[in-house]
Image (tube, rainbow, N blue to C red):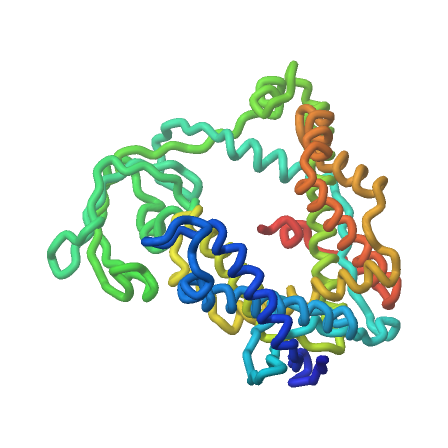
Amino acid sequence: MSSVEIVSALERRLNASIPQQAVRGEVAARLKNIGRTAKIAGFRPGKIPAKVVAQHYAAKTQQEVLGEFFHNSFVEAVQQNQLNVMGYPKFELKSENEELIEFSAIFEVYPEVVMGELSGEVIERVVYELTPEDLDNTILTLRKQRTTYQPVERAASAEDRVCIDFTGKLDGEVFQGGEAKEYTFVLSAGRMLPEFEVAIIGMQAGEIKSFDMTFPENYPGMGGKQVNFTITLHKVEAPKLPEVDAAFAESVGIPGGDVSLLKDEIQANLQREMGRRLKLRNKEIAMNALLKAARFGVSGSMVENEAQKLLEKFKQDLQSRGLKIENSGLTPEKLYANAEGRVKLGLIIAYLAQKHDLRAKPEQVRAMVEEHAESFDNPEEVVDWFYKDASQLQDVENMVMEENVVTWTMQQATTTDKSIAFNELMRN
Protein backbone atom coordinates (compact mmCIF):
# COMPACT_ATOMS: atom_id res chain seq x y z
CA MET A 1 0.00 0.00 0.00
CA SER A 2 1.47 3.35 -0.99
CA SER A 3 0.62 6.96 -1.78
CA VAL A 4 2.52 9.82 -3.41
CA GLU A 5 2.14 13.37 -2.16
CA ILE A 6 3.38 16.61 -3.71
CA VAL A 7 5.88 18.39 -1.47
CA SER A 8 6.81 21.19 -3.88
CA ALA A 9 6.79 21.86 -7.60
CA LEU A 10 9.28 19.08 -8.32
CA GLU A 11 9.62 17.26 -4.99
CA ARG A 12 7.51 14.24 -4.10
CA ARG A 13 7.12 12.00 -1.05
CA LEU A 14 6.22 8.33 -1.32
CA ASN A 15 4.52 6.95 1.80
CA ALA A 16 4.42 3.15 1.84
CA SER A 17 4.41 0.12 4.07
CA ILE A 18 5.71 -3.44 3.78
CA PRO A 19 4.59 -6.56 5.69
CA GLN A 20 6.73 -7.33 8.71
CA GLN A 21 6.23 -11.04 8.10
CA ALA A 22 7.77 -10.81 4.62
CA VAL A 23 10.81 -8.99 5.96
CA ARG A 24 11.28 -11.48 8.82
CA GLY A 25 10.95 -14.42 6.45
CA GLU A 26 13.58 -13.02 4.08
CA VAL A 27 15.96 -12.21 6.94
CA ALA A 28 15.57 -15.73 8.36
CA ALA A 29 16.22 -17.32 4.96
CA ARG A 30 19.38 -15.29 4.45
CA LEU A 31 20.69 -16.01 7.94
CA LYS A 32 20.18 -19.70 7.27
CA ASN A 33 22.24 -19.46 4.09
CA ILE A 34 24.93 -17.46 5.89
CA GLY A 35 25.13 -20.12 8.61
CA ARG A 36 26.16 -22.75 6.04
CA THR A 37 29.39 -20.94 5.11
CA ALA A 38 30.08 -18.51 7.95
CA LYS A 39 33.33 -18.76 9.89
CA ILE A 40 33.05 -17.95 13.58
CA ALA A 41 35.75 -18.78 16.09
CA GLY A 42 34.93 -21.82 18.20
CA PHE A 43 32.50 -23.39 15.73
CA ARG A 44 32.89 -25.65 12.72
CA PRO A 45 31.53 -24.29 9.40
CA GLY A 46 27.95 -25.45 8.90
CA LYS A 47 27.55 -26.36 12.58
CA ILE A 48 27.06 -22.86 14.02
CA PRO A 49 23.84 -22.48 16.08
CA ALA A 50 21.25 -20.21 14.48
CA LYS A 51 21.24 -17.98 17.57
CA VAL A 52 25.00 -17.35 17.23
CA VAL A 53 24.67 -16.62 13.49
CA ALA A 54 21.93 -14.13 14.29
CA GLN A 55 24.08 -12.42 16.92
CA HIS A 56 26.80 -11.80 14.34
CA TYR A 57 24.82 -11.11 11.15
CA ALA A 58 21.20 -10.25 11.99
CA ALA A 59 21.61 -6.45 12.15
CA LYS A 60 23.46 -6.19 8.83
CA THR A 61 21.10 -8.61 7.11
CA GLN A 62 18.07 -6.72 8.43
CA GLN A 63 19.43 -3.48 6.92
CA GLU A 64 20.12 -5.14 3.57
CA VAL A 65 16.66 -6.69 3.37
CA LEU A 66 14.92 -3.47 4.39
CA GLY A 67 16.88 -1.56 1.76
CA GLU A 68 15.81 -4.00 -0.95
CA PHE A 69 12.17 -3.94 0.15
CA PHE A 70 12.21 -0.14 0.22
CA HIS A 71 13.74 0.00 -3.25
CA ASN A 72 11.33 -2.53 -4.75
CA SER A 73 8.32 -0.77 -3.25
CA PHE A 74 9.61 2.53 -4.60
CA VAL A 75 10.11 1.15 -8.12
CA GLU A 76 6.61 -0.37 -8.08
CA ALA A 77 5.05 2.94 -6.96
CA VAL A 78 6.96 4.88 -9.63
CA GLN A 79 5.68 2.54 -12.33
CA GLN A 80 2.11 2.64 -11.06
CA ASN A 81 2.08 6.45 -10.88
CA GLN A 82 4.11 6.90 -14.10
CA LEU A 83 6.61 9.20 -12.39
CA ASN A 84 9.66 10.53 -14.23
CA VAL A 85 12.10 10.29 -11.32
CA MET A 86 15.28 12.31 -11.25
CA GLY A 87 18.26 11.12 -9.23
CA TYR A 88 18.01 8.88 -6.18
CA PRO A 89 15.35 8.84 -3.42
CA LYS A 90 16.11 9.46 0.22
CA PHE A 91 14.50 6.71 2.32
CA GLU A 92 13.34 7.21 5.90
CA LEU A 93 11.95 4.61 8.32
CA LYS A 94 8.85 6.14 9.91
CA SER A 95 7.46 3.42 12.23
CA GLU A 96 7.06 -0.30 12.64
CA ASN A 97 4.89 -2.72 14.59
CA GLU A 98 4.26 -6.43 14.62
CA GLU A 99 2.50 -6.32 11.25
CA LEU A 100 3.85 -3.40 9.18
CA ILE A 101 6.96 -1.35 8.55
CA GLU A 102 6.11 2.14 7.35
CA PHE A 103 8.62 4.27 5.44
CA SER A 104 8.82 7.30 3.19
CA ALA A 105 10.97 8.19 0.21
CA ILE A 106 11.69 11.80 -0.75
CA PHE A 107 12.63 12.30 -4.40
CA GLU A 108 12.46 14.75 -7.29
CA VAL A 109 10.78 14.39 -10.66
CA TYR A 110 11.81 15.93 -13.93
CA PRO A 111 9.83 19.08 -14.67
CA GLU A 112 7.16 18.98 -17.32
CA VAL A 113 8.43 21.02 -20.25
CA VAL A 114 5.96 23.79 -21.05
CA MET A 115 6.75 26.12 -23.94
CA GLY A 116 5.14 29.37 -24.99
CA GLU A 117 4.46 30.22 -28.62
CA LEU A 118 7.38 31.22 -30.83
CA SER A 119 5.21 32.57 -33.63
CA GLY A 120 5.23 36.06 -32.14
CA GLU A 121 8.99 36.16 -31.62
CA VAL A 122 11.39 37.98 -33.98
CA ILE A 123 14.78 36.30 -34.28
CA GLU A 124 17.72 38.11 -35.86
CA ARG A 125 19.77 35.52 -37.70
CA VAL A 126 23.37 36.60 -38.34
CA VAL A 127 24.67 36.25 -41.90
CA TYR A 128 27.88 37.05 -43.73
CA GLU A 129 29.14 36.83 -47.31
CA LEU A 130 32.85 36.26 -47.78
CA THR A 131 34.61 39.04 -49.77
CA PRO A 132 37.88 39.24 -51.74
CA GLU A 133 39.16 41.59 -49.01
CA ASP A 134 38.73 38.81 -46.44
CA LEU A 135 40.92 36.56 -48.57
CA ASP A 136 43.55 39.29 -48.97
CA ASN A 137 43.58 40.01 -45.24
CA THR A 138 43.99 36.31 -44.42
CA ILE A 139 46.94 36.04 -46.80
CA LEU A 140 48.41 39.17 -45.19
CA THR A 141 48.10 37.51 -41.78
CA LEU A 142 49.96 34.45 -43.10
CA ARG A 143 52.67 36.73 -44.50
CA LYS A 144 53.02 38.54 -41.17
CA GLN A 145 53.45 35.18 -39.42
CA ARG A 146 56.50 34.63 -41.65
CA THR A 147 57.98 38.08 -41.18
CA THR A 148 61.77 38.42 -41.31
CA TYR A 149 63.72 41.40 -39.95
CA GLN A 150 66.57 43.38 -41.47
CA PRO A 151 68.86 45.90 -39.68
CA VAL A 152 68.17 49.56 -40.56
CA GLU A 153 69.94 52.81 -39.70
CA ARG A 154 66.99 54.95 -38.71
CA ALA A 155 64.84 55.76 -35.71
CA ALA A 156 62.71 52.96 -34.29
CA SER A 157 59.04 52.92 -35.30
CA ALA A 158 55.97 50.77 -34.73
CA GLU A 159 56.36 47.12 -35.84
CA ASP A 160 60.17 47.31 -35.81
CA ARG A 161 62.11 44.74 -33.82
CA VAL A 162 64.45 46.31 -31.29
CA CYS A 163 67.22 45.05 -29.03
CA ILE A 164 67.67 46.97 -25.78
CA ASP A 165 69.17 47.01 -22.32
CA PHE A 166 66.87 48.43 -19.65
CA THR A 167 67.09 49.16 -15.95
CA GLY A 168 64.07 50.15 -13.88
CA LYS A 169 64.40 51.73 -10.43
CA LEU A 170 61.83 52.25 -7.70
CA ASP A 171 62.91 54.81 -5.08
CA GLY A 172 66.45 54.61 -6.49
CA GLU A 173 66.69 50.79 -6.23
CA VAL A 174 66.40 48.26 -9.08
CA PHE A 175 63.16 46.33 -8.53
CA GLN A 176 62.65 42.64 -9.19
CA GLY A 177 62.19 41.98 -12.91
CA GLY A 178 63.15 45.56 -13.73
CA GLU A 179 66.43 44.85 -15.48
CA ALA A 180 67.47 43.00 -18.67
CA LYS A 181 70.33 42.89 -21.17
CA GLU A 182 69.98 42.58 -24.97
CA TYR A 183 66.23 42.13 -24.67
CA THR A 184 64.58 41.73 -28.10
CA PHE A 185 60.93 42.36 -28.91
CA VAL A 186 58.66 43.82 -31.60
CA LEU A 187 57.21 47.26 -31.01
CA SER A 188 53.39 47.50 -31.03
CA ALA A 189 53.04 43.72 -30.62
CA GLY A 190 51.59 44.15 -27.12
CA ARG A 191 54.48 42.42 -25.36
CA MET A 192 55.51 45.52 -23.37
CA LEU A 193 53.46 48.24 -21.73
CA PRO A 194 52.38 50.99 -24.21
CA GLU A 195 54.10 53.78 -22.23
CA PHE A 196 57.37 51.81 -22.31
CA GLU A 197 57.15 51.29 -26.08
CA VAL A 198 56.29 54.93 -26.75
CA ALA A 199 59.54 55.93 -25.06
CA ILE A 200 61.52 53.73 -27.48
CA ILE A 201 59.82 54.90 -30.68
CA GLY A 202 62.01 57.60 -32.26
CA MET A 203 65.24 56.41 -30.64
CA GLN A 204 68.31 55.58 -32.76
CA ALA A 205 70.70 52.66 -32.29
CA GLY A 206 73.31 53.60 -29.69
CA GLU A 207 71.06 56.15 -27.98
CA ILE A 208 70.42 56.10 -24.21
CA LYS A 209 67.22 57.46 -22.71
CA SER A 210 65.80 57.85 -19.20
CA PHE A 211 62.15 58.46 -18.39
CA ASP A 212 59.58 58.09 -15.59
CA MET A 213 56.67 55.69 -15.95
CA THR A 214 53.69 54.73 -13.78
CA PHE A 215 52.54 51.11 -13.84
CA PRO A 216 48.80 50.45 -14.37
CA GLU A 217 46.80 49.95 -11.17
CA ASN A 218 46.15 46.26 -11.97
CA TYR A 219 49.79 45.42 -12.77
CA PRO A 220 50.91 42.48 -10.53
CA GLY A 221 53.23 43.62 -7.76
CA MET A 222 53.82 47.11 -9.18
CA GLY A 223 50.31 48.49 -9.62
CA GLY A 224 50.17 52.29 -9.48
CA LYS A 225 53.89 52.69 -8.68
CA GLN A 226 56.06 55.26 -10.45
CA VAL A 227 59.51 54.09 -11.56
CA ASN A 228 62.41 55.44 -13.59
CA PHE A 229 63.66 53.48 -16.59
CA THR A 230 66.98 53.86 -18.41
CA ILE A 231 67.05 52.31 -21.88
CA THR A 232 70.00 51.67 -24.18
CA LEU A 233 68.93 50.89 -27.76
CA HIS A 234 71.39 48.54 -29.50
CA LYS A 235 69.68 47.62 -32.74
CA VAL A 236 66.66 48.48 -34.90
CA GLU A 237 65.35 45.94 -37.43
CA ALA A 238 62.57 46.62 -39.94
CA PRO A 239 59.99 43.97 -40.81
CA LYS A 240 59.98 42.42 -44.28
CA LEU A 241 56.97 40.44 -45.49
CA PRO A 242 57.49 37.57 -47.93
CA GLU A 243 56.13 37.92 -51.45
CA VAL A 244 53.12 35.79 -52.39
CA ASP A 245 55.05 33.44 -54.67
CA ALA A 246 55.85 29.75 -55.03
CA ALA A 247 58.25 29.78 -52.06
CA PHE A 248 55.59 31.36 -49.85
CA ALA A 249 52.95 28.86 -51.02
CA GLU A 250 55.27 25.96 -50.22
CA SER A 251 56.00 27.44 -46.77
CA VAL A 252 52.31 27.14 -45.89
CA GLY A 253 52.06 23.57 -47.14
CA ILE A 254 51.05 23.83 -50.81
CA PRO A 255 52.91 21.14 -52.81
CA GLY A 256 54.67 22.59 -55.83
CA GLY A 257 54.09 26.15 -54.65
CA ASP A 258 50.92 26.69 -56.70
CA VAL A 259 49.74 30.18 -55.67
CA SER A 260 46.29 29.76 -57.22
CA LEU A 261 45.83 26.51 -55.28
CA LEU A 262 46.91 28.35 -52.13
CA LYS A 263 44.20 30.96 -52.63
CA ASP A 264 41.60 28.28 -53.38
CA GLU A 265 42.46 26.42 -50.16
CA ILE A 266 42.39 29.59 -48.08
CA GLN A 267 39.02 30.47 -49.61
CA ALA A 268 37.63 27.01 -48.84
CA ASN A 269 38.99 27.08 -45.27
CA LEU A 270 37.58 30.55 -44.66
CA GLN A 271 34.20 29.50 -46.02
CA ARG A 272 34.16 26.41 -43.82
CA GLU A 273 35.24 28.29 -40.69
CA MET A 274 32.82 31.12 -41.40
CA GLY A 275 29.97 28.61 -41.78
CA ARG A 276 30.91 26.91 -38.51
CA ARG A 277 30.96 30.19 -36.61
CA LEU A 278 27.68 31.35 -38.13
CA LYS A 279 26.10 28.09 -36.99
CA LEU A 280 27.39 28.62 -33.45
CA ARG A 281 26.16 32.23 -33.34
CA ASN A 282 22.72 31.34 -34.67
CA LYS A 283 22.48 28.34 -32.39
CA GLU A 284 23.05 30.63 -29.41
CA ILE A 285 20.40 33.04 -30.72
CA ALA A 286 17.87 30.23 -31.23
CA MET A 287 18.58 28.73 -27.80
CA ASN A 288 18.06 32.09 -26.14
CA ALA A 289 14.69 32.33 -27.91
CA LEU A 290 13.74 28.89 -26.57
CA LEU A 291 14.76 29.84 -23.04
CA LYS A 292 12.68 32.99 -23.32
CA ALA A 293 9.67 30.91 -24.39
CA ALA A 294 10.12 28.34 -21.59
CA ARG A 295 7.33 28.27 -19.03
CA PHE A 296 8.75 25.87 -16.46
CA GLY A 297 11.31 25.78 -13.69
CA VAL A 298 14.07 23.34 -12.77
CA SER A 299 15.08 22.01 -9.38
CA GLY A 300 17.97 23.30 -7.35
CA SER A 301 19.67 19.90 -7.33
CA MET A 302 19.68 19.76 -11.14
CA VAL A 303 21.27 23.21 -11.31
CA GLU A 304 23.74 22.33 -8.55
CA ASN A 305 24.90 19.19 -10.36
CA GLU A 306 25.31 21.05 -13.65
CA ALA A 307 27.15 23.89 -11.90
CA GLN A 308 29.63 21.43 -10.42
CA LYS A 309 30.27 19.94 -13.87
CA LEU A 310 30.82 23.40 -15.34
CA LEU A 311 33.14 24.36 -12.49
CA GLU A 312 35.30 21.27 -12.92
CA LYS A 313 35.51 21.77 -16.67
CA PHE A 314 36.38 25.44 -16.18
CA LYS A 315 39.11 24.58 -13.66
CA GLN A 316 40.66 22.03 -16.02
CA ASP A 317 40.64 24.54 -18.85
CA LEU A 318 42.35 27.18 -16.70
CA GLN A 319 44.93 24.70 -15.41
CA SER A 320 45.79 23.64 -18.96
CA ARG A 321 46.64 27.29 -19.66
CA GLY A 322 48.55 27.81 -16.43
CA LEU A 323 45.90 30.08 -14.90
CA LYS A 324 44.13 30.11 -11.54
CA ILE A 325 40.40 30.28 -10.99
CA GLU A 326 40.85 33.08 -8.43
CA ASN A 327 41.90 35.42 -11.26
CA SER A 328 39.21 34.35 -13.71
CA GLY A 329 36.42 36.74 -12.70
CA LEU A 330 34.01 33.81 -12.35
CA THR A 331 31.31 34.41 -9.74
CA PRO A 332 28.81 31.90 -8.27
CA GLU A 333 25.98 34.01 -9.76
CA LYS A 334 27.38 33.67 -13.28
CA LEU A 335 28.03 29.97 -12.82
CA TYR A 336 24.52 29.16 -11.56
CA ALA A 337 22.80 31.30 -14.20
CA ASN A 338 24.70 29.45 -16.89
CA ALA A 339 24.01 26.07 -15.28
CA GLU A 340 20.27 26.76 -15.00
CA GLY A 341 20.11 27.70 -18.69
CA ARG A 342 21.98 24.56 -19.73
CA VAL A 343 19.69 22.32 -17.67
CA LYS A 344 16.60 23.93 -19.17
CA LEU A 345 17.95 23.70 -22.70
CA GLY A 346 18.77 20.02 -22.26
CA LEU A 347 15.17 19.33 -21.28
CA ILE A 348 13.77 21.57 -24.05
CA ILE A 349 15.88 19.98 -26.78
CA ALA A 350 14.93 16.45 -25.72
CA TYR A 351 11.25 17.45 -25.54
CA LEU A 352 11.18 19.14 -28.96
CA ALA A 353 13.21 16.38 -30.60
CA GLN A 354 10.67 13.80 -29.46
CA LYS A 355 7.55 15.85 -30.08
CA HIS A 356 8.50 17.08 -33.57
CA ASP A 357 10.69 14.17 -34.74
CA LEU A 358 13.88 16.23 -34.76
CA ARG A 359 16.25 13.43 -33.82
CA ALA A 360 19.32 12.95 -36.00
CA LYS A 361 18.79 10.95 -39.20
CA PRO A 362 21.60 8.61 -40.32
CA GLU A 363 22.17 10.63 -43.50
CA GLN A 364 22.47 13.84 -41.48
CA VAL A 365 25.05 12.26 -39.18
CA ARG A 366 27.02 11.02 -42.17
CA ALA A 367 26.98 14.46 -43.77
CA MET A 368 28.27 16.14 -40.61
CA VAL A 369 31.04 13.58 -40.16
CA GLU A 370 32.15 13.98 -43.79
CA GLU A 371 32.05 17.77 -43.51
CA HIS A 372 34.29 17.62 -40.45
CA ALA A 373 36.64 15.18 -42.16
CA GLU A 374 37.20 17.52 -45.12
CA SER A 375 39.66 19.62 -43.12
CA PHE A 376 42.02 16.64 -42.64
CA ASP A 377 44.60 15.19 -45.02
CA ASN A 378 42.94 11.74 -45.06
CA PRO A 379 39.18 12.31 -44.79
CA GLU A 380 38.31 8.63 -45.27
CA GLU A 381 40.34 7.62 -42.20
CA VAL A 382 38.60 10.29 -40.11
CA VAL A 383 35.16 9.05 -41.21
CA ASP A 384 36.12 5.46 -40.37
CA TRP A 385 37.37 6.56 -36.96
CA PHE A 386 34.03 8.20 -36.14
CA TYR A 387 32.04 5.13 -37.12
CA LYS A 388 34.28 2.84 -35.07
CA ASP A 389 33.78 4.92 -31.89
CA ALA A 390 30.22 4.85 -30.55
CA SER A 391 30.81 7.74 -28.13
CA GLN A 392 32.18 10.00 -30.88
CA LEU A 393 29.25 9.16 -33.13
CA GLN A 394 26.82 9.86 -30.29
CA ASP A 395 28.33 13.33 -29.92
CA VAL A 396 27.72 13.96 -33.63
CA GLU A 397 24.13 12.72 -33.33
CA ASN A 398 23.55 15.16 -30.46
CA MET A 399 24.98 18.04 -32.50
CA VAL A 400 22.78 17.16 -35.48
CA MET A 401 19.73 17.01 -33.21
CA GLU A 402 20.60 20.46 -31.83
CA GLU A 403 20.93 21.80 -35.38
CA ASN A 404 17.52 20.35 -36.21
CA VAL A 405 16.06 22.10 -33.17
CA VAL A 406 17.71 25.38 -34.24
CA THR A 407 16.23 25.06 -37.75
CA TRP A 408 12.79 24.26 -36.33
CA THR A 409 12.99 27.24 -33.94
CA MET A 410 13.90 29.62 -36.76
CA GLN A 411 10.95 28.31 -38.78
CA GLN A 412 8.46 28.92 -35.96
CA ALA A 413 9.48 32.53 -35.37
CA THR A 414 9.71 35.55 -37.66
CA THR A 415 13.33 35.53 -38.78
CA THR A 416 15.26 38.52 -40.11
CA ASP A 417 18.85 38.55 -41.38
CA LYS A 418 21.47 40.74 -39.72
CA SER A 419 24.89 41.15 -41.31
CA ILE A 420 27.84 40.74 -38.96
CA ALA A 421 31.35 42.17 -39.34
CA PHE A 422 34.01 39.67 -40.40
CA ASN A 423 36.32 40.51 -37.48
CA GLU A 424 33.49 40.12 -34.99
CA LEU A 425 32.49 36.79 -36.49
CA MET A 426 36.04 35.41 -36.43
CA ARG A 427 36.92 36.76 -32.98
CA ASN A 428 37.67 34.03 -30.42
